[in-house]
Image 1 (cartoon, rainbow, N blue to C red):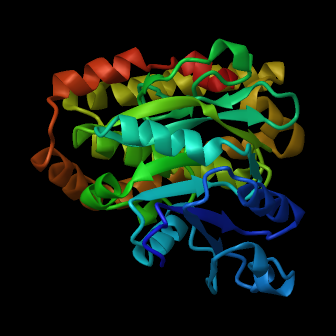
Image 2: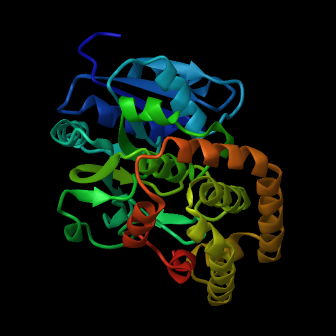
Length: 337
């Protein structure tokens, strides 16, 4: 890698279709040029090369199976020495000033371990994400989702960044151990952001770092796969990261969220309503039970991670709770999105 490379942009892909090509071409148009692009092909079929998309990237990592989003980022990071690591979904298109804005914010704020982009929905230009909010049971949702972009024009501190389009400081990333490979899909960015918070790092929302995103184009906004992994992994987020007072409340918040999901299901609203329209809604309790059982099996490992995070914490549980409260989303709001 050239010494001039300051950012490694990692684009994991499963389908390696025309959206990936559009994503990579948007990186070619960046005004900031000191970066490399690593595509991680999780298709298991070498689709990036067979569709001749490797010429749009600096390097391609080919996996025999889908290793998941976080593992893909970790793989690319292991082969890079750039001081910054950017993540970008393969169904996202970066505006020309995206990287320049993110790197400038990092340079100006040395305690920022990560930066969140202004991620807009490709369909109508409203906000997909300007950072993430945390629920009382470990659920997380996009800050500003479906609101007008004009309402989010100020650079400010947020709880954590959405991995769909983010910049991470390598010092922070390596210090906390990168993404948790066990998450496979969903919530891995929430877990990483909360671990960075415990380690004393800040996260900034950068409004000029704009990305257009086709929300959940690959795995689907409401699917059996997503229902299982989101539920399993939000439990892991809570067990690993929540202080005792928040962890005690988490099961009660989860029960409230289940109730509001049921209401949304009946009304045909939110992700539960979308699941009902595309799948058998009676299967949802089964996915919840499976997810809780899987989390229970992983409990010893999660508790060991919890102890490790606390051992190296740079903020107190009270400070963590205050930051979580300032970036809180209710169970009813989670169910409605």
